[in-house]
Length: 301
Image (cartoon, rainbow, N blue to C red):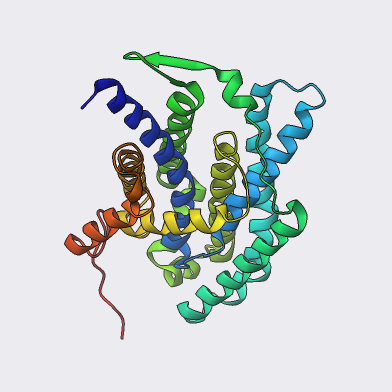
């Protein structure tokens, strides 16, 4: 195998895996704490991408340098997570926490369809693209291969910071300890005075913000157009299932596996690019039905 081509595959796979991780970790965090499979999670990714590219491109026409789009992306993701995610949790999901999971799935699917159509109403069907941050950070050369610093260094660094930040938040902060307590035993946590609803709200806002951040950071690398939300939510489910639902560290490894698998398929067998992530998921689930890091749990009847 050509060494330079192998390096190119690795760079591309790691960058793609980093973006998928940002979205999938929010999905698996929400499921791990709230036990809700949120189909609308992909819509936060799409909203983050549309809002980020629109705002950054508009500011660029007024003289903003490309690198300043990066803090704009972060602010955009936080606003979407707090406003859209917060409203969704407060006025819709909170009403169905005690209902069957099938009903919760249907409600989040309905929200997903509404948000998908809302995107078409606001942004239409034409593609949007703004590559200011990509150009501002320039390129790096490794082993004779030149690749963008944005994808080679910046995206993996952000994914690593998110992973370490979530671990620190959940294990070494009071708010994180409250969320873990609600995850382990909701009734016992409420009995000692913990506000489980507030823990759910914080968790959902974090998950929505991470999905929107993934979309915002993906916008300089690809055209933003209708359909990116459904594509990403299906991929995120594959990552979460491969890792084991609710497993944050597992989501990082699964996203890396799927990113590298897809990248190898792109360069060596393009006809398998779409199916490769799901092929990896099926192979893992055939060996470990609970996922790479999932734990077998007793089922209540």
